Amino acid sequence: MQFYLEKLATLEHRYILGMRVDATSYEDATAIILALAKTRNSYCVCVSNVHMTMETYDSPTFARLVNSAVLVTPDGMPLVWALRALGVKNASRVYGPALTLHVCEAAARMGVKIGLYGGTPESLAAFVAFLRNRFPEIQIVCQIAPPFRPLTPDEDAAYTERIIESGSQILFTGIGCPKQEFWMKAHQDRIPAVMIGVGAAFDFHSGRVKQAPRWMQQMGLEWLFRIAMDPKRLWKRHLKHNPRFVLLFLAQWLTSLFGWQLFTSPNRMGVDRV
View: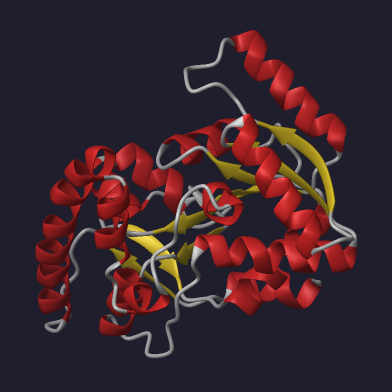
């Protein structure tokens, strides 16, 4: 365990448009998360893609929040390519839904308790059934599908108490970016668990939402598949974020060739992982 905690402190990373992205792998990220879970302290893990990158670019407050996470994995291929362009030649993708399964497999093997927060009652039930079928020894000790509206203080306190009393050591949080990251940060130091923002992973693995074919994922075209599946909800987000990401990162990369730095002011960078 100590080996992976020490490895965490030395992970290579780059700031992409002001957001820290750690160069990690499924194996290392999983081992680090399990090692952190064993400490029974409170940590946030962010699974980053272009959407999150542009949310941090648009909001210094959100940038500081993400940059203070204990681990920020490159979920999308554009961030993997950006890491490589900035000198991390062995950068690889750590896709949230796949990371979820890696962590669950290791947790089942090591007897680490899992909690789930997000989704609908139906999607959560289907996801739990999927996990228990795939990992019979998994200990899912808490399942909460919060309403799709702001919680009252009493509701939030009750949910938080349920999570704490369950003894969850890893809490998968699937309520969407940036809502889930703000929720995790607000509950850090209140919930003694590793909280991982996994977005739509519950819906993907429960079969309620289709994942893009592997070839589209590898080519960085997952966004196109998701728009096709849910155009009304997603087209504006991708139209707003994707072209700006390409242009802004191109500017960052070109200036980096001359040894200059963009988007790395203290106001955006916040603090390193805590």
